Image (cartoon, rainbow, N blue to C red; front, side, top):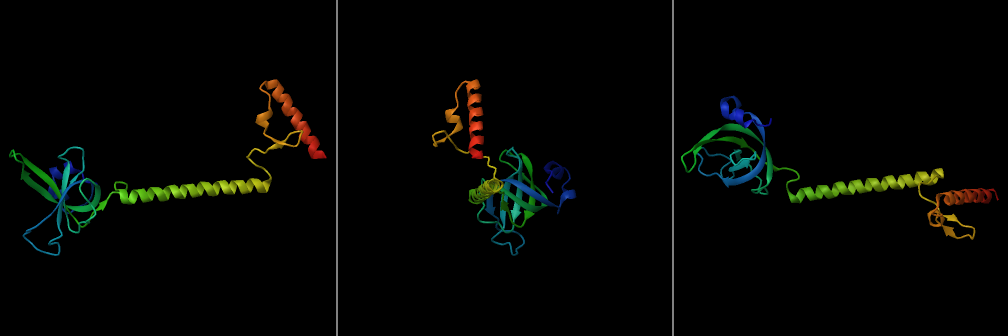
Length: 194
């Protein structure tokens, strides 16, 4: 579930051990040394500070057991992690602050936030769309040829046998243009009867 950081701060015991989806910008990552209890995480465990909100104080601390090497500060990340505890600490001015801390196994960069994968996905999507448009136009053309209909303008032959586009030889005056179209129609009908 998406963490409600305010609710977790108010009653941390209620949320301890629950699984959450943590998303945000990786602000800092560093190797954790000298834990009281050793284990398979020795030499690998990292502390990640993830800014989940707009404010500088909107951060979560996540201990990542198997951190991916390809993620660097400034990138958007997503990981599943269990709530551990509120970590009480003080700043340089002596002000007390409680960080919401989690423990997770690994993390992923959020799709679209990194350049190596998103550009490839975008190129593939565009290629598929272009192929679909090309297939549609080809199918439409074949159907129009098979039925004898075409949405494409056909050239016509003028009285001298040369190909002429209708829009090239129509007069500007609407009345004269209609008369010319009527004359062409009658001429085409006469030609088709012969």
